[in-house]
Length: 289
Image (cartoon, rainbow, N blue to C red):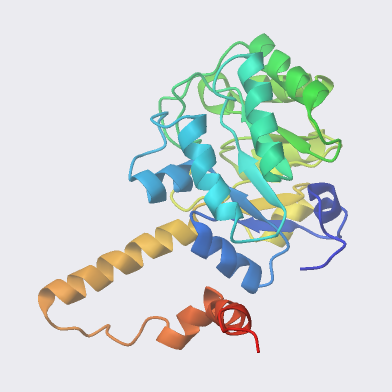
């Protein structure tokens, strides 16, 4: 890891789009770092799906999700951006949630204006709280953060239920309340992306999702439209899920056609740092002469 890239603001200062893959467990966090990325994202959708086997519809709260995130973070020193849903309550809960993650070392958090129980941003049936409630939460987070480097994103899901104009108005209110960056979830056309990317002078986020409603572009194309951060929050999880399905089908069929086509045993041990632990064992476990 580049020693100079310790905060989310450091990542944003680098020229070009900031691409953040999503980690769903500790192994994926290690793989992201080994692949050369400078930071990563953890969202509720992959965290609760991979750890608890449930959909992202408000079934898990701060205690359960933060435990999963702590485990993921233990496997990587890269700056991490965490989605904290609506903060799990009122302004007190938002500050409590923020402090919980700051103590874990999270570099950036994202608060949203969905009505609880929330849904994945590209799912149908979303509703949002009054803008004033979200403004209060953003003000609380910005005013009570323990570390001045903690980057606070404000997300609005109002595009689907209330239209783009209301989403833009809400984003402006959240910016005035103290948000450092903005995320208007699920724009539906290239023109909407152009409008969002050209409206604000702070970092703006794009969230390409295969099967979602937002046009899929290359990271450089989002950047040219005004989006600094491009998050691929569930790509690893979707591929892992499909791969496991195929392997299980192969085992059940008795064909074993996929045997030996996954990661090699030594390759896996290298990924999880086996040699580092062997070195510690050899250095300290043997009696000193």
